[in-house]
Image (cartoon, rainbow, N blue to C red; front, side, top):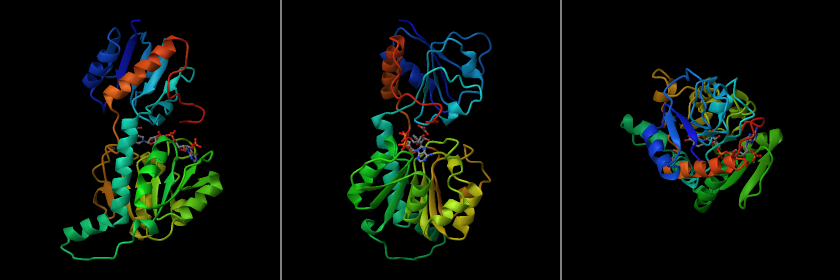
Length: 312
Ligand code: NDP
Ligand code: OXD
């Protein structure tokens, strides 16, 4: 079957995706959109990252929409999102492995006080402090989905004391389970390094704010690889300035690229990475999307289906 696939992303290289789809779906027509669709669009499938609002609604023949990332907030935030069209997200072992590597890297950096040593080095200061062992450090993971669970499994061999928080609860060996509103307070109160791997939804937007940050033990650190809008930036900066939060490793920001004057760039307690915790692998993911397209053409839902009402 000759499908018409439209592709829109300002952060991915279209050629890599065109090549990847040519391998797995040679008969398909692959059209790269660079901006708004002007005339009628008869695309069967849309593969997108931050599509302009209203564009998907204009593609009236769509059979499925594929997010180029694990998160779908960039699509569901469109007020005209066509919620009758199945939406699929990236669930891929390479994406998961990349995220867990990032989490291990930053948890170790925060645990061993690396931001403080880098700041001291810039000032020529020799300021040793005795490190704790991992077995004495409590790591709390907000979001125990595909990524949160794998991160917990990769942190476990270091001996960290692990807990996690999710909406519906979970069972994971060696990880204390918290859920719901009371569970949030409990995990925050007992966490030295807080890892945010939540999806951005109406419920999780601004979840790390003055009130919730205040529940963390003094000196706790934060790692955010979920979405920037999980954090109320002014509240985190105030907590960092007051040294209630000792350091933060941030990969995602409310506005990306992080604007030049933002205080995160220069704050000595903050490590900034440019939304690279984990990247979607075109070859692996195009193959999975193509298999999903076959399913949709056969009247089945795509793999990795999102529930738009739930928001993830
Ligand atoms: P999943 O959907 O697999 O997991 C989401 C988890 O969050 C689930 O455990 C879910 O709970 C929990 N959750 C959702 N809403 C709430 C809530 N209101 N209260 C408590 N828990 C909640 O997502 P992934 O693990 O695949 O991805 C998570 C996010 O990571 C993505 O949405 C994206 O924003 C981000 N990401 C960032 C990348 C980067 O490079 N920085 C790369 C890839 C992803 P439950 O299990 O009960 O449903
Ligand atoms: C994703 C991301 O959601 O890259 O996959 O942030």
